[in-house]
Length: 369
Image (cartoon, rainbow, N blue to C red):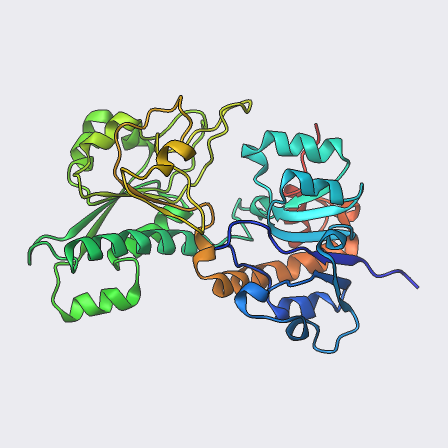
């Protein structure tokens, strides 16, 4: 009899606002193919107990968090902290949002420790489309936060009966497309319905790509009209910002900057990575709104990065986590067929000669040194 694979689910030791955990239905589904080990307290931040996960199933077991890292497969949405990689044995497979292209040091560390890995954000199909993503939530949650600020600032969004809110969106990829819809609906369908009933002036979304963003003259004209500036870009050169900090001075004082790209500052990496909008902080689920005079600006932006020009900024490393249960239900639906293939064939068994989901998994495997 072939031994069943084991899957560990450590909870994330991130900021207190990070409440995401996979839901009981997904755990029960995986238990058909593997023995599942949940870290003590898994899912408790969103109101689930171990009994909710176990449901009397002997294939679902509760263990200490460190032990959850010791299984054949380890599933954790955000990458573990560096010290936690010590808990993962050689040959085990880490499944997480690992962001290989912008985390070269992480790739080197995984290879050095002989840990296999599947990066959820790198699982793409034959047409270069991501199969595990929540781009809609990234766009809607970030833009909702911006409209919340303007609504509070103006005690209702319309400044005058005929003056619409103007949203400038940089980037026309998947996040940018969702951002257009979110921006034209005030970031929230309920709010949009309310303003339609009030005969409000609405909002106007303008989206631009690389053929515009590299032209300062054209961009200045657009910036001076923008109430909300959105970065939804996917850059070819991570070491060069799309918006130099000096351009922020063109925005009206009341404008809100929305960071949906959420690239980090990795100035020591080779190549280095900077934010798409130069000089803005990087927030998280504990704090994602930064006013211009916020003292944390200095704490989160490297001193070598220009940041003197500032506007209220909303930026969050994990925008989908604003609504944790909806987020995790979404990811689970996408992961069902992928996990079935991976557990059946094993990390070393998947190849580009396989089926649709197998090929997608292959593209997400850890790059070798």
